[in-house]
Image (cartoon, rainbow, N blue to C red):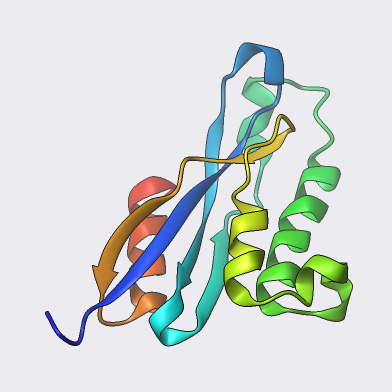
Length: 127
């Protein structure tokens, strides 16, 4: 257990009609302080969202997902949030919001390899 690192993650959800609180899981964001790791994996093929709302702007949601990635990677395109420390970026990304792209509550676990944990969680929660 000594090699295991604590990680935190949240599931990314698209909520086509916020007032109905229906959602589809589309990705996972994972932060591991001990490995200085922050990354997101998502499925940007959002055609299945048409079941909820045929008028949904899929391109706009895809741009929101790309912004998540830019912030995780600390890119200049991530704006001021992208320049914050990893922990602050993760907290900002997982803050409660009432928009079309939301995250679940933050959950924790232990892993040897955060990239592998992220892949496993994506397959489990979205796949």
